[in-house]
Image (cartoon, rainbow, N blue to C red):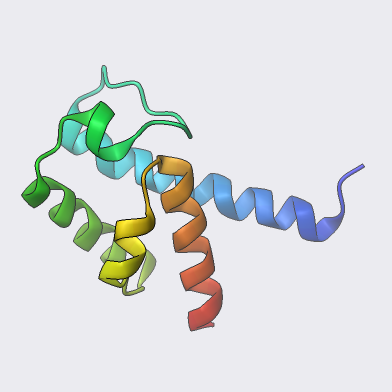
Length: 92
């Protein structure tokens, strides 16, 4: 049985992942396979400018600032969702 805190965290991560996927669909098209283990740079074929535009759009969507050192640590969509979740909690 999941605890209320665990369920809340899952819901938060799910909504974050949904927004990440929505932002990526604009850049990659509807046929791109987007899952938690999708590697942002290797699997999606985005150049550095497209990645930075994507990050800026996420910052606007979530009303946060994503530091460059955090971006360097992120490889997968799951990593990105976790980083955004942490940044939102730190900002609260």
